[in-house]
Image (cartoon, rainbow, N blue to C red; front, top):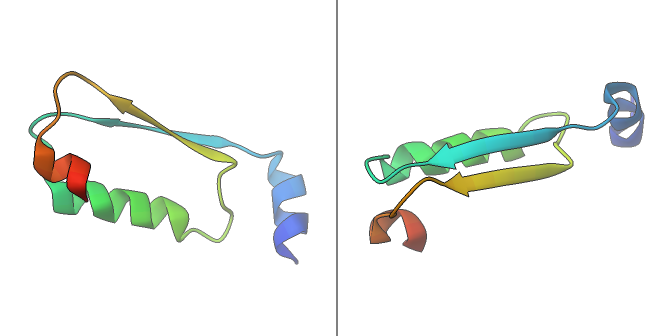
Length: 60
């Protein structure tokens, strides 16, 4: 099955993620990399920054 076939079967989808002040930057990066590394890729990743964000999260 090709990537295009997989996408047409799934109908496409979005992934929504929230990031908070106290989130660990390494865990956040791992979560995003996990989404990107999936066999069937999302059409989009929606990131919600819930309140102020630490500089260490923004820089990564």
